[in-house]
Image (cartoon, rainbow, N blue to C red; front, side):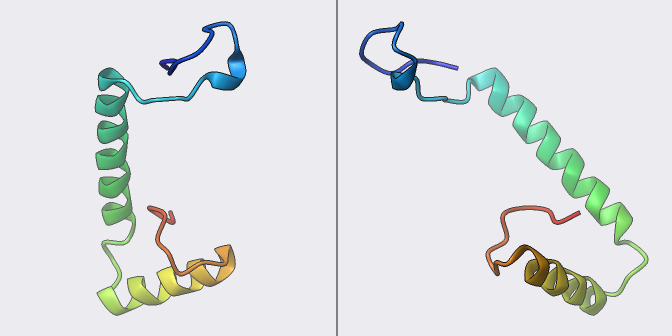
Length: 70
């Protein structure tokens, strides 16, 4: 995490920012999550996957896909 401006001791001024190393980890985790989701849903037809996603979105209360639902 890096700190942006102001007194370094003032915790209210700290804004989290992903580092280059953190972005690499995030990308690996995202890729692994996508692969796991593909594997979990491999036995289903696309129409079934789409229906499943719609049900999950109804449960979480949004139609905006914030990422994997699995």
